[in-house]
Image (cartoon, rainbow, N blue to C red):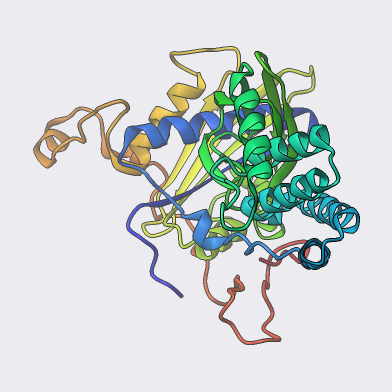
Amino acid sequence: MRAAPSKAVALFGVARQSAASDQAAKLEDTLSRKLGAAGDVEFVDLASAFPAPEPQGIPRGDALFDEGRSAYDNLDPDTAAVKFKAAADAYVQRPGDLRPEKLGEAYLFQGASLLLNGDVTGAKAAFTNAMVAEPSLRPDAGQFGQDVQRVFAEAQKELTAQPQGSLVVTSQPQGARVLVRGRDVGATPLSSVKLPPGRYPVQVVLPGYAPSVTYTEVKPSAPTEVKAKLSSAPGLAALRDAAAKAGTEKAFSDDGVPPEVGAIGERLNARYVVLAAAFQDKKGRLHGEVQAWDLRTKNRLKGVEVDFGARDGKGSANDAADQVHTFLTGSALPQGKKPGRDEVASSGDSMLRKPWFWAAAAGVAAVTAGVVYVATTDRAPGFNPVNGLPGGISF
């Protein structure tokens, strides 16, 4: 078993019924943001646990581009223009694998081909597309004549004169990185990214989640909104399934460490596992409950209830974050003081009444190697990924 970092935390929202899904997501988000803002809580590195796949090439687009170049060099502008447009279309259809400079180059050569046939309007439109795809692109004077240079400059002037639009991007969950033309422009919620009018590949990416990739039309003097609802990738989805099993009412009321909690901790190399459950009572009212486990000491935080109608104060999600923070670090949010040894000795409150010391090792069953086995990428083929997790969960 790998040694867990001293304070690595895995946190998951759990919906006990589908009607509570949105509240579970919001509770997870609130706790994550509040604990992250404290500056002394180390979350597990999902980017390392679930590395993003490397972008693939677009061979069909590359082949069409090469055919266009051959026709262009052989003074066949009609065929060249068709091939370059087809290459650009192939690139646009795969925005997740797109290299903006390659798309810009396809549009540039398409414009040059159209200009050879005297189609100035079409050439100008293609040159505009090239600049939107890759703003740094310029026609090489050694490769293109003065006619291309002149019409490209006119298209550039006209594009610059247009009022810019803005891009507004939100995601569920929040905190995802936003890439425009493959370049990182910030994290969600993201507002007012200024862009010239045109179509842009917008990627919203978050470790452990399938990326959201779309082409978005930005219009002049207007905001364009992109809403991305990210879905867990298979590895993280398996962990969320495990969290859902460990977040049931029965699991929360039982003594001991649920085997799924131990599996989550080992798979993510985490010392702490925090589960935030949202559920609906018989009258349809929504409630929340948070529990946390210290897998090293076997301490457990219980009894943290959340009133979704409370914005602040006792019972609010912020109050829950404060209690979780105390459990994780021994100090309260935003800045608290962990009691010293002398203060504890002289205090009328016993250590057992402190939330960060609730449910200590007595009565807590350890997850042993004979109960849960968690698959990792470096284990040999054929290894049984999980033994003891209901439903055949594998990571």
